[in-house]
Length: 151
Image 1 (cartoon, rainbow, N blue to C red):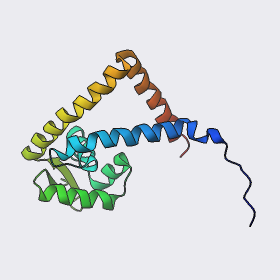
Image 2: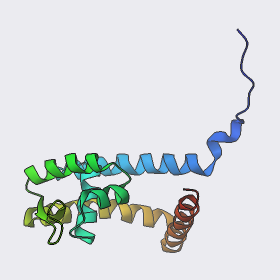
Image 3: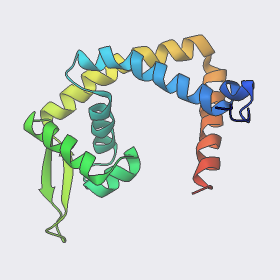
Image 4: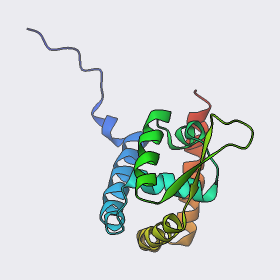
């Protein structure tokens, strides 16, 4: 059996996309123990942050913002609701649409998680310095915009 042609260069693992992926995996790994300490997963934290910043989002809107399916949001929201962190309310004009809001316990849990995550964010900013941290955020916004244009 013959070998396929070598069409992937050795430098493929040096591409920007691979660096972003490694950085994201490392960041998620750093966040997991901090979030676990307050009873959250990274997915739960993301959902709670979005509901905090944009109260009243429905499952479809959350799915688009989080990059997951509406069904995945529904499953996670059900778990968070059972834990008393979010509540569903019927949309005032569309009775088939359920909006999500944080409960008082959800706000307390999110605040605790945010404090833990803040320490990780501070470590990043300390390592980069404030100017480079700001520059990195701007570069990442450019990456996001460039990839959004390809859809």
